[in-house]
Length: 143
Image (cartoon, rainbow, N blue to C red):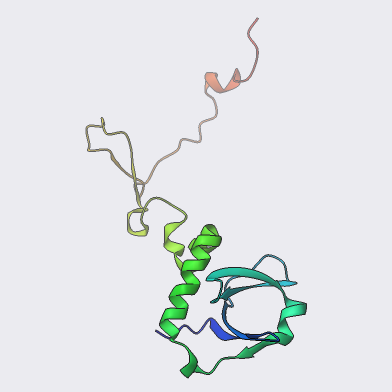
């Protein structure tokens, strides 16, 4: 599995190099910070871009298993930011509870005689007659 959104590199510190990963679809909500999966800590960490940028170096593809690092990144994101994970990696889980192919019909109460399905594609005629007595008194207080 080659994830085109996942960048993998090293966070170079004075005494060691730590494998890190970043997905360009995952945003912290602050342009001054970045989320990186830190393999040593096995978690998603928010870093200051200004401080961390100079310490990041690309990792050669031979240094890591891309499928393992992608799975570890997703697991860490799901644990740290479950809502963000659902938006980025499982967009079909949010939104309407009615599947896309069923959106033309809606389910009513189970006690309906027609099985509870109402066809919303039927044409509905609406009368333009505004002379109804009920409309004239609507909203007025009765004394």
